[in-house]
Length: 97
Image 1 (cartoon, rainbow, N blue to C red):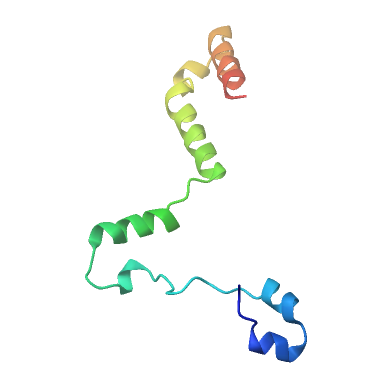
Image 2 (cartoon, rainbow, N blue to C red):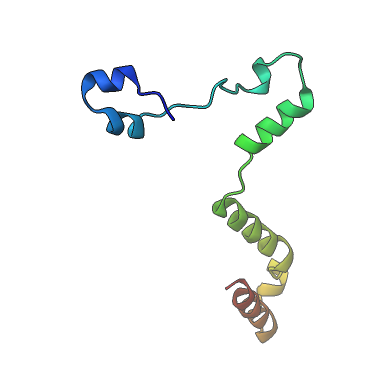
């Protein structure tokens, strides 16, 4: 059974105050940069989990670069109009859809 919160019961809100007030788990975990002994592997993992996010825009930028770099016909080839390089671009665009 939980003990009633004195501050909540004094304000008259009781259950509502206990329901909506955030109480983090104690002890609060801090980043490994402030923990002792120093653990470099844990620090690197912490940075990777919080700062290295693979977003949709990043994936689209990589796909655009790869398709431009390795699938796009060369400018020398596209100087003259030919059905070959037009079909190549058309098929590439269909695959990317």
